[in-house]
Image (cartoon, rainbow, N blue to C red):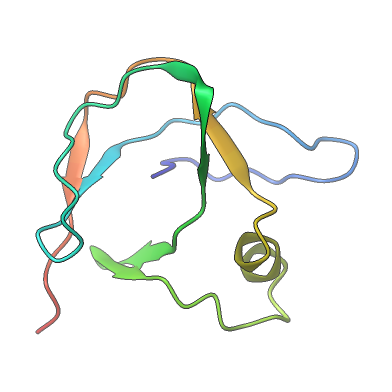
Length: 91
């Protein structure tokens, strides 16, 4: 999960941002460390609000949600991620 906000555009299609590993019993995500692997791409899976994941991307009028839903956001891990956040289960 990225930890910093960034604005991408045609003039600036790439950026370097901080990230943290996401842990979740509900989603069976258990890797608290993610090694740098420039040969592995990640895509947006959802947004996190109040430590809960929202994977819907159901608002096509929101540019971020539209691009994410259509596979237009990709990331690579360039430095080992060794901090993590545990998502809460819904009430």
